[in-house]
Image (cartoon, rainbow, N blue to C red):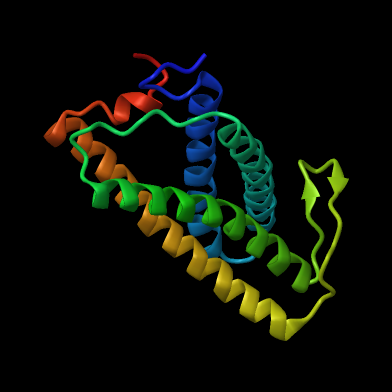
Length: 178
C-alpha cells in the first residue's frame, strides 16, 4: 500500500527491475555491436531482443499501474521549476522506454529477422524487410538509446543530489526499503 511519501511496492519493484533490464540491454548492445560475427554474437542479439521485449511489456504494466496510483507529493522545498523538470524527465523516460525497444523491434523486422521471444515463439512482424528502412531504424534505435542514456544519467544524478545535498527524501520514495 502506498504511503504519503512512497510509491506502492509494485511500482518500486517494477522501477528497479526495469532499470536493471535496461542496464543489461544497454551493456549487451554495446558489447555485441563490437563483436565479429559468430554464434556468440548471434546469441547476444537474441538476448538483447529478449531484454527489449521484456522491458516493453513491463513498462506497459508499470505505466498502467502508475496511472492507477497517485505519486507521492514532492517536498515543499522543491521549486516549481524542479517539479516541472522532474515531471518532464519522467514523461520523457516513459516515452523512451517504449520508443527504444519498439525501434529495435522494427529495425529487426526491417532487417528481415524474426524476434523469437525467449527462443519459444515468434512475435508478429509489422514491417517487411527493407534495407533503406533498416538503416534508418538502426540509426533511430541508436539515437534513442543514447538519449535514454543521457536522461537516465540525469535522473540518477538528480536522485543523488536530492539524497545527499538537499536531503529531502526524494530517493526514499522509490527505495525498496524505508
